Image 1: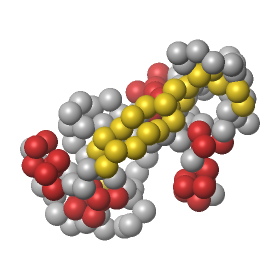
Image 2 (image 1 turned 45 degrees about the vertical axis):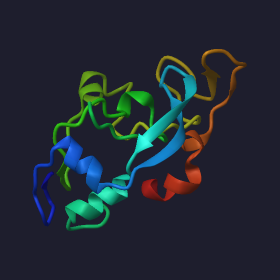
Image 3 (image 1 turned 90 degrees about the horizontal axis):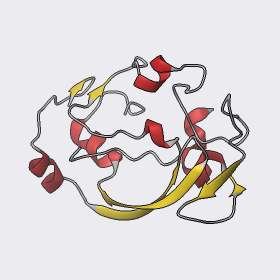
Length: 148
């Protein structure tokens, strides 16, 4: 970890896993293409990692992935090689590639349509009837205060 932290340090994956409190959860996953599914997750909370890093401001914050289930799937980190805490908005692949379709925040919001299709409903997979999409993918109570 690097950047705006009190203790910059490099961790081996095994060492990091030993230091963190491992939990099991079941998350809703939502794709910007309007499909959804339930995904089991085993890992540690980002809060535990932030506490380990001791980042200066409290609001900053492949063998390891970061799950943000209130965002569309393409925002999920596929592999972590470095975590740097910063107070600047970083460039992102999809936002650079198609900024009119993939905004930086990319929160699940059924009231904000994708330019080519509605986000008001979702199709559960492997099969199920279309259903109304939930604001922040059902995590509104936990994350809405982050986006005021």
